Image (cartoon, rainbow, N blue to C red; front, side, top):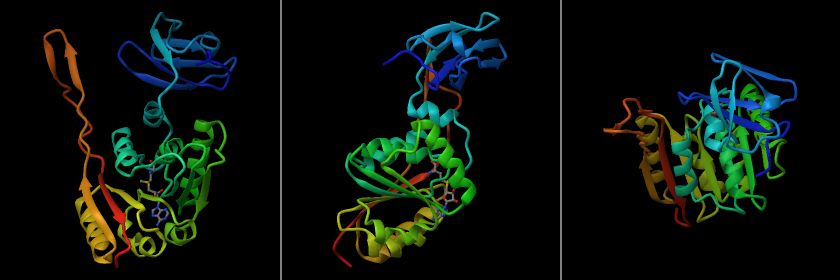
Length: 260
Ligand SMILES: C[S@@+](CC[C@H](N)C(=O)[O-])C[C@H]1O[C@@H](n2cnc3c(N)ncnc32)[C@H](O)[C@@H]1O
């Protein structure tokens, strides 16, 4: 990796593990509880450097991972957490070269992961019904990728209007009523394509599962959640952290078939 340059993302972490996301600009100064850090003191350093604030605070400067970026970026709509992004990518089998239809774009966090997963030969079409969320996501995606990637189309509208047009290999839904998209998926998803939806409550999961089952052309319907528990390893204190993200959402995965 090249040394930090102007316009690069940099994550600085203090001794207590507090993280701050910076976009490095010549002449800019980052202020925090432990003094100031001039961006110019980071520009030109290699990834993983140790820097010191004006009050002697020790900071580690690294290039943020996608997970760091998502957890520290400005959010509009609630983002998909990294623990769930991993599961969506793997159980949805999002792979290079695929065409993915996503909705809603929200803050663009899931979109970032999808665009990376399909690679330069794939395509992501992300649909958002709210203008304000779409504008927020566009800014975030532009900032994250340093421009909107050629493989990404951002649309404002209703996802049901896009499924037959796009005929996606993968349909990825993070919206409150995925069950309302089932009819469009029956019509527009090719056989073999995979449905992934993500909702916060069990009644939504139940309605989605019943709608998928009722359609008669979805197989291998599965519902699950992902629990991620950090552990504290410090001398003889070897135990789970006191705090954890207790609940985010439930993931539903299904495969479209020729039946129905
Ligand atoms: C929870 S947010 C999505 C967050 C996003 N996955 C992320 O990681 O940043 C849900 C979004 O879906 C949008 N939405 C809800 N129903 C929709 C629909 N039928 N078509 C398109 N967008 C929809 C909402 O406006 C909202 O912005």
